[in-house]
Length: 265
Image (cartoon, rainbow, N blue to C red; front, side, top):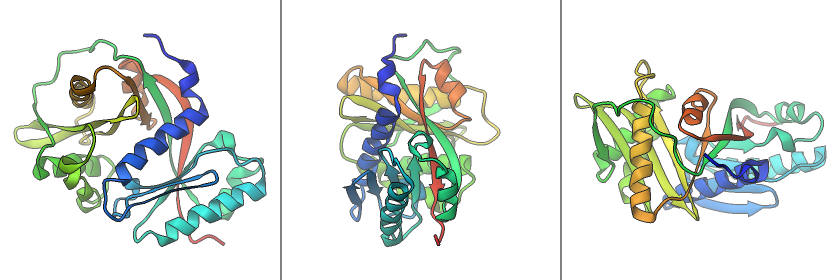
């Protein structure tokens, strides 16, 4: 599998995330999308914090620039009726950057790595025997969110925003896998520009290691490819997901860190 390593640098990893979340945010009627200097605002204005993202999408070369970016980001976060989150690259922080983030009341949540592949590696096992449904109706779309909510240990209500996935614009497919009528795994793939982006990959706790997530991903990606042809594949992976994505043919890119907003100083 040949990869273009230049696609995986910090600038491209950050921009791909912004593009992907701009698409998500735009699906909701009260969304706020803006670019103010290095601060990219992609707020769905829903009660799902993962759909309310603000990204520092370029370098902050000194302390003053970082504090200004945080002030701008916090202004938009404060204007959102629900929780929002801040994403940034540790490579773009000035000296003492992490201390400044703490001083500004930001709490580290998790890290994600941009990953990309020109094509998927061959499956390592037979596809699990599940019932796979594309989220073309609200019930299946809600199940897409429920699986993610349980995977992240969050209330189902937080991910009820996925109920509208069946009405999202553009080329996108959410796939949910069912075992004896229970939703156990999910993934979504959608077209952004000349890339296919993969998101919402989750499997219920206790059911990992059976190939469920990989199967849902492959189904979602395949559905987009039938519609638009083969495109470069992109995703942003948590530490837990990286081994699966590497095995599927994805290469590692730059790291991004996710923070929650506090009250500041």
